[in-house]
Image (cartoon, rainbow, N blue to C red; front, side, top):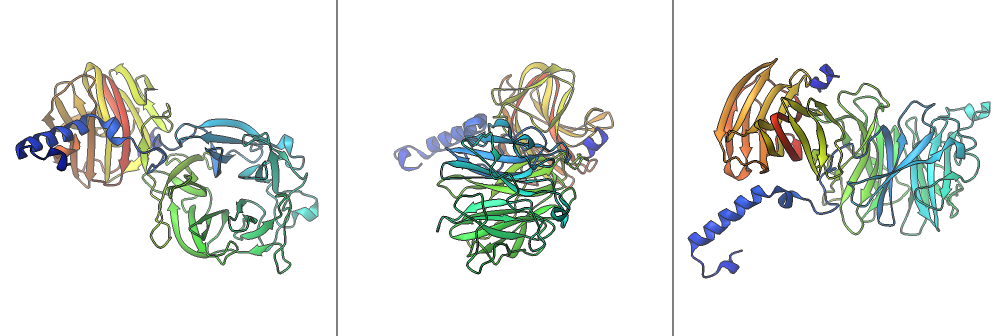
Length: 515
């Protein structure tokens, strides 16, 4: 963050001698390190996080909700701007959770006669041949409908998941407060037990559930004659989300101030879609090394699997504008008892989407080609992510294609445009792996080791920095090539650097002190 602040098998071998088996095994291990593409590529839709990086789409977006239509993953977010500019909704679809197609203006205020500002928090669902999109508009406050101000939760309908959607009833579906809940931040859920549809919603620290009739555009009635039941769990603020897994109903919600460090996601579990919902735990919150203000989520369950993702919005560490929120997803794991493990924000980029979202560059001509980040030869070229790691494991593949210099990883880095003050581990065309530090323009070599260098070869390069101990690995199975102690830099950004070379980088990963 600081640098951005300153810068803005044995049976098959039967009959063979043991030494032959050992040699074959050694060759296999060696090849596994020199072919990282095949070794590291994940099973489709079985990722630990967004493999091509978070944000996974470009632009300011928030409040994502999700659906799966015709074997495509769909995300419907808020367009995150000031209320008077927030007059449209976009959507995105993907077959692989890597490459996303944008559908602009799936719903606008032009197609909702009563909405004049602040369209947000869309909730998609399909029933009886129609696609429905529920939304909040106009941000009404308690008592305002009696003063002639219209707002609340609306519903739009379309024949296609990409729209265009048009207002279904010409007025809010829920246009006033019930049980103290502001009519915003809705989620719609159809139970597989009996086909009953429910709408969960609420702001101002109150949450309600209501039934939707079969037409999906009118509110139903519970057996006791009521239409709105309060289900507010402890610390609820906004952002209702319902999912069901193995017969258990999970209510998720956001806590804290949406622009603040306390914005987060918690959940409750119940054996009924209407609760009670008692808080279990907070599972997603800001990470001072990765991103802040994380919350208001949707979920994705890959069909016919127990693979789940939490899709949410967050802000970059250096971002100061509250509306500059971006979309991210990370893996969501369940324990044996059905509880949810705390979500870990991970940092990866395999450039499979052809983009380099969230990267900042200084010098050099950077581009994504064939799922690799390329930089043309120049005296100095740097690219960094808006991260702020202290203890970390940081890795990428590094290949030098031209020049007589070096290329590698920068970490615990500040002041990118001034030269990236911090540490630098690199592959050199002189046949060395090197570790240096840059202290306000003064470069000091901390260690080096010999390697076999070839132009065009991809070297898996990794740094592990814990406290003042720094280890540098090339082809992990051989142990650290460099081990030093230095406490000049304690935290900062992670990135890539190239000096007097053309270089190619891939499979970027940064995490907290992983082996």
